[in-house]
Amino acid sequence: MTRLPLLLCVALCASSAWAGPKKATPKEPEKPPTAAEPAELSKKDVKLREKAFAAYETELASGSKPRAADALVAIVDDASLAEFHGEAYAKLGDILADLDLKYSALCAYEKAFETATDTNVDEVSLRVPKAIEIAHKVGDVAILQKPFAANLGLARTDDVRGEMAYLAAKETVRGQQWGTASAILKMVKQGDPMWSDAKVLDGIVLNQQGKYEDALRAFDEAGRTGAGRDARWTDSLQINTARTWYGAGNYPRAIESFARVSRGSDYWPDAQFERAWAHFRMDDFNGALAQLLPFDSAFFAKWYYPEADLLRIYSMFLLCKFPEAESQMEHFKEKYSPVLAKLKAWDGHSNAETFEAARLYAQKGKTTELPEMIWRPWGSEERLSQSIGAVKAADDELKRMKSVNANPFSERAKEWLTARRDAVVDAEGGRVKARFETQRGELGESLTNSEIFILDILRMKQQMYEQSARAGKELEAAKTVKRTERLRKGYAEWPFEGEFWEDELGYYRVDVTPECPASMRQSVQ
Image (cartoon, rainbow, N blue to C red; front, side):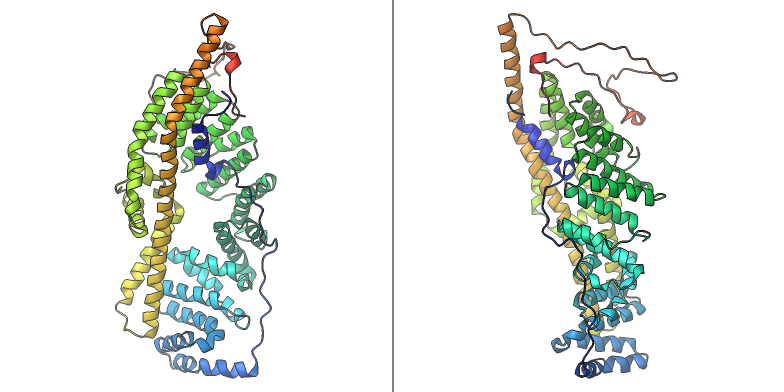
């Protein structure tokens, strides 16, 4: 053969989210943007401000916070007072928080950060710590990412600068602005509580830019300073380190790092699968098959890993195990054709319906229309879990606000909170649905190209038989060296006979003898 079967290309493309960085030359500035020094109000503006906030000051002094809030709403509704909107939103956030309308207060603070000007940035920045605290309580820290990224000048004090920069960097990462993200993360200083998290994010960003050595140094620093973090954080760091070694082409080190992911971790299945790719890249097909064997067990029947099946089939192909490859390809088609049909049928669902279905699975384990293997990853996804909590917090606050007398500030708070709730539902539902669409496209392409793969098998067979005919003798399997291995003291070995034991998953060894003649052996390098 002079080319690799298209099936491999499909499998590689399906794994692109982790298998290697996207090469990009960032056009963003290498230094984080900074805000101008606060400007002073002119005498005319001072008088205008005093007049604008007069009703607010009077009502607050009389002890009527609701009427003071109404006065602030009047300011933000007046376009001629735009210069004072940031301060008005900030003060409105304070009142809403005092009235135990915390999520509404967070929405007000968000608007304050968005509309802050040079003349009131100091005043507005005083609310940053409180906004971050509330955001963590209601589970919607993401609401602060965009305004922080747009106005890093709000980071006036050391106690909030680190987390502000981290959240701002996450926003730029979402837009794949790698250069800007790296620059912003430099604002997080060593010793800051966010330091280890920032180094992990910096490592991911550097990986995406192909700067593998720098990324590994960042991960190493995160590991040293993040000692004592929970197992989930540690495993996340470990798998990102492994992916960076893989991207750098150092497959032995990648294998070592993948092997360090905890056996009971949510990341363990991904680590097993991705480790198989590292073995495959080294032409260690037996090593790849050993890592992929658990995915053929009943324990993974409800997990979505079509790429694992494809990689196993292709490894068998390169070992010239054609009957096994053909039969497994037929099994692949039978297993995933119904899944593809259901993924296609999901197109008619809205983002809100998708979010609700994901919420039902995450909270109650109920599946909706799609098989559990499709829903399963969302059951433990941290971002979705936080979003579900945020939507619940918004709904609870909206229910409590029904008993509040209708007035300008309460109606405005309901409006903001409803809009934010709907935005979270739409964004998260859209994110889940987008993943379904990607799976549909990848799976559809894999199933379509399965026929091409069968043709590749037939072509390979034909070449082998033609070679045998020219040689004038029967085709013989390639000879391999026989080695006797001794088991270490205290160990026992049982041959695999089709049974699976849960505690053995991940520890299998496979010893398949290639059936290819030496002249037809292939390499993936």
